[in-house]
Image 1 (spheres, rainbow, N blue to C red):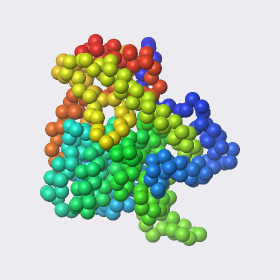
Image 2: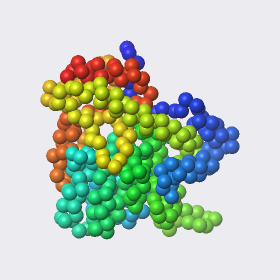
Image 3: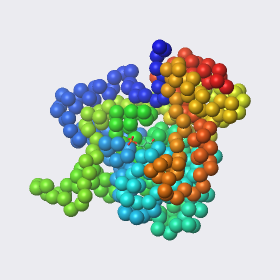
Image 4: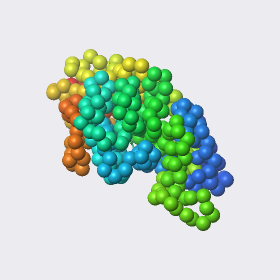
Length: 369
Ligand SMILES: *Cc1c(COP(=O)(O)O)cnc(C)c1O
């Protein structure tokens, strides 16, 4: 059996930065959901992304949950959310017992279509927040989306779980909205094995998020709680991994972009192949390189052939409005995300891949074609 090629797997620094911080946590006995690594990781992350206030949490999903709470979403409120996303974006809306209304993608960005967002606002008046997602390291059309949110005076939450390192007009995606979230799950561009970050320009929101994430403990010696609390803080051990990973983020972005360029030059001549879009005013990370395929080379066929060679690939996210759990909720539009799901394929984009590995993938894709 040939060596496994993964879609996107954890990639610790060759220098061993992560282990140094983890050792430090052991040496000083900070094996707790607080400690110096947590404080430093938050500071270093804030500096890296250019967001003033940061709170490290146990997952990106936890960050989304508390972002919705910070933006004042409550039971029965409507929250707009792209239909083409990973379920976590929509699950968090349901944790609040709020009602997701899904918005289709546009072909220009594969992300939330601003025209459909405007259309959705014309239909609904009780909207409490908009969640925008930057899929696969591609920025959404933030310019129009921000304008629409301002026009209707509704807060914007950016789900930047897949877009750490991706900038829009020179600034990190995830730092434009009222609240932003990042993920350090094992498959993301950098990882803490599991973890997330909440970011905001508003110190009060960040402080509230920190408070809720620490079981909402009031300022009192005895344990007193005037609000519902959560246990969502990040471990000091894992924050150590995060600090080390942050040092190699730039090289991970470069490698992801290299992988995309490699595929594009090796497979660009295939008849009918489509590529993930180039976003104006943005530097994409291509967290996963995605293509669309014609009838003769279905994503299923390619995935099967790759799997026979021990290579992992994946379809593009199945839209939320087609998910058994979410299909009862409204979706504005839907044809673009449905087509992307049907014809789209995520090629292995693991930053540990060598040129030889990339060549192995391309050879199989060409053969199926
Ligand atoms: C991974 C991901 C999340 C959730 O992050 P976790 O850290 O795994 O909870 C949310 N949204 C999107 C788009 C993601 O890809």
